[in-house]
Length: 221
Ligand code: DC
Image 1: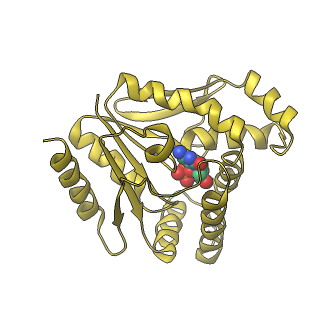
Image 2: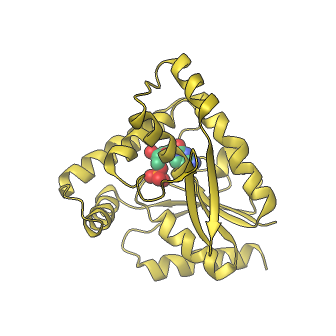
């Protein structure tokens, strides 16, 4: 099985680039952020305070979370319900960032992510894929772009989905999430020592995908 890890901050283009590269290579694209988002959604709907250990334990004991792949597209199921669309709101993004700092939640998701990579050739994107989840991945890429460019991309994406958040709000949220994600104690966002860093600022989607494919072909002839 081939494992390719793509990590980086929110809005660096990980999901769009990874999805297209996976399609070209015939691998499964796994968006691990969707798992943290689904748990974030659960905490919002069920008023779970993740700073309270007993509440986290209670939640994890009853929560069922699953990933399924239909025609190459990932769907995330929370307690049997497909929540793939619902998890794409700014509120869920912030909740996901909060739940992702809780060690018990990261442990809970670890096996799920590892098991997918055992069964399929994958391009997996997230924050700790190269450092924690798939430390033996054949290729690790750390994708970045300037905060302003990342906020601009997120803003366009949200607008297309009908959201009314301003660019300034999106930029502020993104900087806050960057801070939370890279300053948490457990599995903070950082490049693995053997990751190749790629800055997508000013690159088109096509150029970014081409670079990733070139790296894969170089590494896996
Ligand atoms: O990639 P995303 O924006 O969908 O991720 C949502 C949140 O989940 C993000 O704030 C960081 C967290 N996350 C994580 O800690 N580890 C991962 N492997 C993926 C996401």
